[in-house]
Image (cartoon, rainbow, N blue to C red; front, top):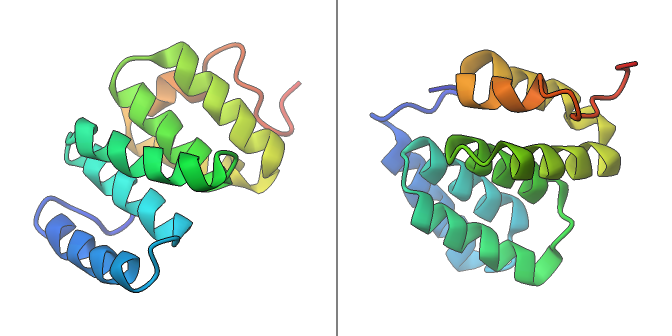
Amino acid sequence: MTHGINTGNAQQFILLLDNTIKAEPDSFHARCIRGFILTLLKDYPNAEKEFKIVEELKKDFRWLLLYKSFLFACQDKIDKAVDLLNQALAKSPDLKSEAENLAKYFTEYKKVVEKQNAKLPGDK
């Protein structure tokens, strides 16, 4: 895995995020990170539930768009993943480095970043 998260410590991260979410239920970023970790653990149904909560509160949140794009990539829904990546980058071009980092560590996401219709800032 990446971002300092591995199967050994993922549950610990989730517990810490649960505490944050319990204290602040509208913590969009904590929920998105929790969804990302659940995706890494291949717990796609719970990742989708987490992202759905964020969508109901703020459907254009940049981290939601990026991490849900990663979920779609892991589910081999490449066109949907590219669409969300493009939305994330249009909203926040500085996410390009995060997307490239995900592509470096995960072959599923590399397919998304290298897809012809992915619009990475600075690409021609």
